[in-house]
Amino acid sequence: MNTTNILWAFLWFALIGGILGLLLAIAAKIFHVDVDERIPKLTECLPGANCGGCGYAGCSAFAEAIVKGEADCAGCKAAGDDVAAALAEIMGVEPPKTTNRMRAQVMCSGTSDYAKRKYNYEGARDCTAAVKLSGGDKLCANGCMGLGSCVAKCPFGAIRIVGGVAAVDYHLCRGCGVCVAACPKHIIRLIPYDSAHWVGCMSCDKGGVTRANCEVGCIGCRICEKKCPAGAITVKDNLASIDYSKCTGCDACVEACPRKIIWSGKRQSEGGIVITRLNKQTEEA
Amino acid sequence: MIELFLLMLSTVLVENFIFSRFYGICPFLGVSEKPDTALGMGCAVMFVITLSSAVTWPVYHFILEPFGLAYMKTIAFILIIAALVQFIELFLRKFIPALYTALGIYLPLITTNCAVLSSALLNIERGHDFMYSVAFGFSAALGFTMAIVIFAGVRMRLEFADPPKAFRGMPLTLITAALAAMAFAGFSGVKLG
Image (cartoon, rainbow over all chains, first blue to last red; front, side, top):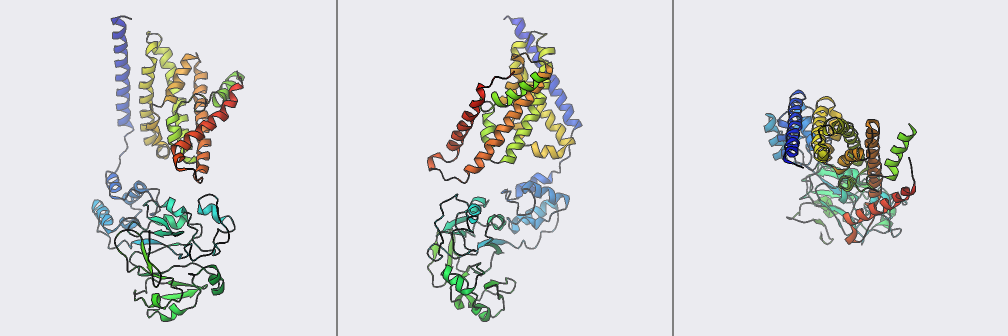
């Protein structure tokens, strides 16, 4: 190999490279697509978890929908008012008043100490798989099995298994609703972020059956319904439920419940999962 | 015609790019967590390898060989494939946005993938004509897609497994890949074409 060879190779490759570069430059001009510069800005403001809570494929798809005018600036369920305001500022519209922040709550109090099991489950660590085996290992058809399908799905790492039941850390929960869809027993609900109370049971069995299955199940005794001064509690299918538009957070139901399953979210402390229930020990992760 | 078919069949099964040649292992391990993303990756690879086989063959035979630059083919192919992928990306973005969003993230990933480069180089090494080159490129990518989709199915099952901590994640993935490769080694005794 001599110098001429190297020189020729160099020249040819410079030429091929130059032609390719030129072609690409021309192609970039011809195939130019206008991208709205607000889309990347909006995407940057969003949480970026791509949880899908807004109903779009991900955060960038949601940003595109805002620019197209299909979605509202307050549509991101995982973000707070500050993000909604930032989005509104980029779009040049009035900031939305409130985003109605929600949080997920696992409506089951039946930790391993209280709820009885029908068999020892040793299969795949997945709720959907376990529920196929005669509806899971708990006697209660609506009891949390604690195998953590919601834990795996949560984009914010807000769910942990505490004492055999999934618990949501509401300092981390953004209310996107991914866990609600992931739970095969449908016992996770979205409730208003500041709601004081919730009924920690989803059992629709009759009182006696619930009593046999679990020490902490709602037996539908209607005491809370009678005691609630705001008329916010109704008992349907042997199960109490709270209407959050009426609840004043007065604690009357918490004290009245003979099964001690109406939980109070008032006594929340900073950091960690601290969930409390009257006369029961505080359970901490 | 029958020879072409035999070439394709042996490229897909006997000389599978992943399981017997160990090309393209990086996307194989990286993008095989879910079958649909694996399929997306596979489609992008099919698209790029087939096109690059079709483009590199005339470049080699009409430019590099006549000018005595055949020894530079590796570098030339890298250059051409990179430019080609870039061009395809621009083209898709303008005219087929749906395909662009589906393949978009995978296209830049495979620009300098060794599976793409090696299929172009093997075409030259084996003296394939144009028709054979395209068929070889397509079936190599088909083998890649098949392997990655099968493997994604296996990995989905592994998600529910509860292996010892030391094996979780990549170690288990590599062991599974080794077992799959051993299964494919069964094809190596088959002599086709």
